[in-house]
Image (tube, rainbow over all chains, first blue to last red; front, side, top):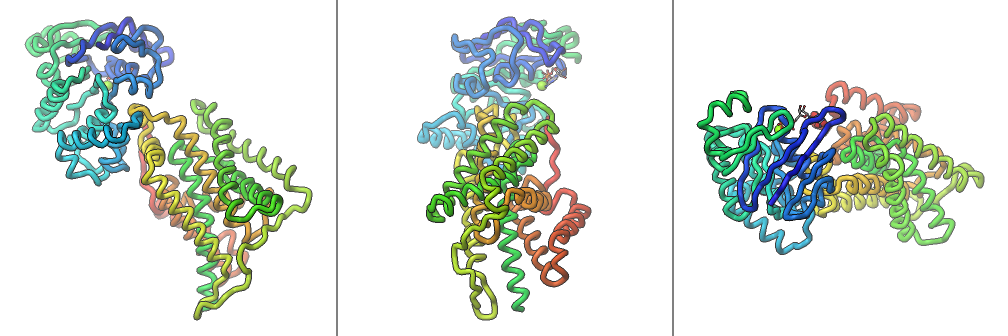
Amino acid sequence: MLAIRHLKVAYGITEVLRDVSFEVPQGRIVALLGGNGSGKTTVLNTLTGLVKPVSGSITFEGKECAGLAPDAIVRAGICQVPQGREVWPGMTVHDNLELGAATRRDWPGIRSDLAEIYAMFPKLADRKKRYAGSLSGGEQQMVAIGRALMARPRCLLMDEPSAGLAPAIVGDMVDTILALNRRGLTILLVEQNIGVAAAVAEFAHILQGGEIAFSGPAAGLVDNPAVLRSYLGR
Amino acid sequence: MLLLSYLLLSGVTTGALYALVALGIVVVNKATGVINFAHGELFMFSGFVAWSLHVGAGLAYPIALPLAVAAGFALGVATDRIAFRPLMKADVISLVLATVGIAFVLRGVARVIWGGKADYLAFPPITSPEPVMLGEIMVIPQQLAVLGGAIVVMLIFAAFFRLTRAGKMMQATADNAKAATLVGIRTERIYTLSFGTGAAIAAAAAVLMAPLTLLYPDMGFAFFIKGFAAAVLGGLTSLPGAVLGGLTIGVIEALAGGYIHSSFIEVSAFVVIMIVLIVRPTGLLGVSRVRRV
Ligand SMILES: Nc1ncnc2c1ncn2[C@@H]1O[C@H](COP(=O)(O)OP(=O)(O)O)[C@@H](O)[C@H]1O
Ligand SMILES: [Mg+2]
């Protein structure tokens, strides 16, 4: 289980997260929603050690992770698929995936995981030697997910994986997220697309004003106009 | 024909050395976004270390070379620890000034250790200095040895960069440092490695060049400027561009010196660079990149 307690995060004097607490139970998919600039990415970046919290605690499988260096957090089993994909454009698909295992030294395991990712995303297998920067948005998203999986995380943080995808392939992304969860991955999903969040997550938290303003079953969200209007501005 | 072949060969040889200096500048700039203004002094200092090992301590040249390269690597690592890592969060001007400071310190130390005896130290030639005729072409064996050595250094570096995990981590950090951090690459170590690698390549260039010329404590700046010009010509972040830029400058200098006047050697390269940069502001092989903050 990933548990976030009283997390406070500031950039300089600008406080972005005032007091954020929520949990992601083992093996579940939880959605974190909120308007633009509400601090969703900041939550994920704090969980992965890119941003140091002012105070609060983050525990994963009972281990305190707040303030650890990013590589220590990857080793602890948490990996992020960043917003905007952030692949290495000038490197091949294969090198992108392989470097996802930067913290690992179990070479046979790395090789079999690579094979598994190519089996999961056959399109990437056809494009192994292509530069990641030359792929379509959807393919780059597969590279970003595959790269994160190469670290063998037990908890995956996904930041708007459906953003910028053609509507026709958003459904594939939903299938991918569900498939990853079926393999036992705990997933914290940040989404702008409420449909995607409602389709995969059991539970949703809405971030507003630096706090969790609403928590409830994700499926109910799409039918709750009051929630959509007041928290997400739709 | 004889003059042309001679000029081309010596141009390519000097150009290959410029290319190595440029490669070091580009390796550091790609990874850290900083121009290491101590690069020329790292080159000079490593050349003197090689002199001490080879002439001073009497070690064979093939042994002195890797030792001087190792010393260069260590100096590069020290530059990172002193001038880059403590200032990583500071603005670029402070970083650049810190490398300028390192340059002055290295130059001062070199004067103390190797100055005084004579301002110029001669490195014994490794092969016969006599030219040989290969058919129509006049060849100086020493130049061929230097050229061959430079090519070997480039190949070793290319293999390291493209095939090893450490090399790929350097590429990834240069491509997108945030993504590198997110997969657990310790980017501050990669910056150290980049400074070390850049300086090691400069050291290899200095040791290869030493038998062709004289060593003096102020030589760093002249080579830095040529290497920097080559790097700019190649686009500042392109490794093949650095090699192409170095060779271009070496050949242009040789041709201008041979066909126009020796006084054109120093300026010709810069004239060409200005023209190239007006036509192609990103350099020959550079791509315009939007820097992520
Ligand atoms: N590196 C940063 N430095 C300063 N302010 C930032 C930084 N990153 C984000 N912010 C600010 O923090 C707030 C939350 O941003 P973010 O976490 O990216 O929101 P979201 O992902 O929900 O759109 C925004 O107001 C943004 O401008
Ligand atoms: Mg965001």
